[in-house]
Image (cartoon, rainbow, N blue to C red):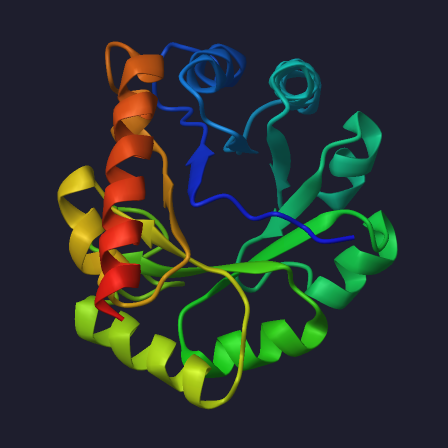
Length: 220
């Protein structure tokens, strides 16, 4: 079964009063079709409750729902897959837990990371961090446009065909240059979550991604 990897991936943001489930509802209402639950360091019952609510919303809208770093929770709520942060459980272990039909994403920072994770069977990869997010910088050093360009060229040269998702302090102003590097898509969190109208902002973001991707494809 082919696993469709969206070009816009929204990671719910826990540093605002609006819960992940409400963010997910507004995002899906605006046309978004991929949500990753971004809750950490909260009570297990709260995470489970939000995961179930988000999964129900995603099923209603036909969106993909991904759990962060917890394949067992992904199975419990019947999410579509799991995303593995760097230096967490490896792809092979996660695959043994969630099975072949679920989606597994993982985080890379170098071309060697990409080779290793692709060989393990990841379905898509985050590549970052792009720009300074203030989080995870020690784990995922910053990458600039030249870094992305060189890493994606190495993927092409070595026939590594796996969707690469840019992640970091990304806004719509970055789309044109980022998509020119050959990335498949972008992962965004606070930029969307902090908007007054997440749904409207999602629609605008999807439009700009379509423009950036189409233009970069034509240029190639």
